[in-house]
Length: 451
Image (cartoon, rainbow, N blue to C red; front, side):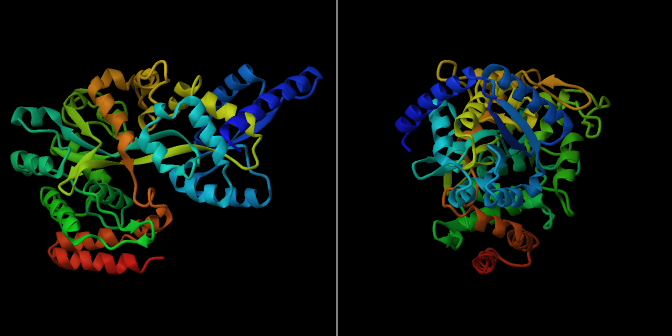
């Protein structure tokens, strides 16, 4: 159905609904599956559903679903013809569910066009792009960040660590162990954290193990640049098996100049979580470290000067079994009048993929910056960090990438990542067990065997 035909159908449907309601018919009810199942997050979603019902007369049943069960539950519900109307889902399901017929891509596309495609982060839309439109409607996301000591960079006259070259220059200037490590790299092979960090570093240099046909051998020259860079940051790190825990601990104690982390560190940096306090001074509630911190989301290598940001995006999928008009109205409400409420569920991990409206382009970004974050204490991000840093956080979603998304090979890329072959071989190279050429050959051999 074209957008114009769907518009006509919706107008006719609206007239029919008005007649039905005037005749005393029951108001519509839709079902909404959400993986945000923690009690306080469910409560916020229930509040938004109530506000939507008050405005439209359409009730929403908010149904929590454990994220690890989402795929099997959706497949079973599709087979039984009993899908909910709307599903809040992760990136990994967008394209496969569209191909399987679980999602109504025309409805999602119409929602995006009605709200204004230009108001959404380009990267978030591109990740869900299908022929003629979009599989699902982007809701929120977060970008992985290089977190760095901006005060030390400024004192040394260093540029922000937005490229391989800038990171290495900062290591040269600031690495002075054990008082100060230039970096804390992820080196623990069996941790997903290392997989996530490495994908970001590979993407930064434009290197991917997949193309539209499946496995694509890694380019030796560009991959060698990745390996040499990662060895440099590993050599500027403490010895041992390192993952998110050590990187956060060393940065919080003032003994690391740069780390890679998710935005869930932002409230902890500002002394708002007692279980992970900054220890740079004697006050665990101090905002001192937050005030000295800068972040970079888009990061580049020598073979990819435009760089890339690694992001995790979540979507609203309108299903094939939906009461389409009601489902579209609910999604539009959640992304417009109710969007600040949507983001308030967990602001530190829900960056606005829609910065504003056509009439007020910064409306939601500005509102998001006022939302309180924290666990034991709360404060708005806008009170803790400069406006330029808030803009950097959100702008990463414009250039967000993941292996296999643009190529339609996300499932294969995910298998490659989960095999941890890249982690293991990179670690062998870091430890001097193999040279770069052998490392590239080993990765190509192992990744090429994954189906």
